[in-house]
Image 1 (cartoon, rainbow, N blue to C red):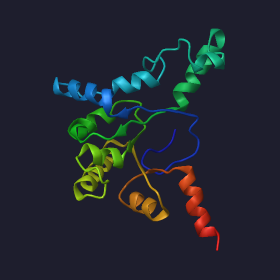
Image 2 (image 1 turned 90 degrees about the vertical axis):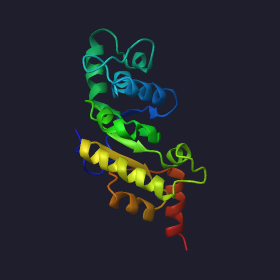
Image 3 (image 1 turned 180 degrees about the vertical axis):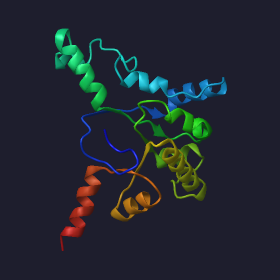
Length: 187
């Protein structure tokens, strides 16, 4: 298992993630308004029994010989190697968010700054002070809950800025990394 408070990168065998927006966000928001804040909806969909309730019907598990005597090995391996990484993109969920991510088996959170800015009414991007304050608030919630905080970065300078503010997982498009690396490398 990795230390959720330090940056990490390699060693993830499989990732299944559900963004906290759209239908899931609405479901979780409605659930919170009726007295509960839970991440069980997502965790149940990612971890197999006995940890949670993910089904094994006709799925990718079939191609791994997950039936018969091999099933228990596949389930154990999958539960150990699968990370639950919800995305934070809905400011309406900030108040119940700590309780949501404090659920067992939530490994990290990815903050989607562009979609967060759209949901906060700023279609021109996440550079607004209100959006940046929300990102700082979410990172602080993650730190308090001992859950890694991830965010996107397009440049080395942006990555350093995000790590300095407390992010422990940086996401970048591989094309941007190659392009920016090439610019630094080539004369």
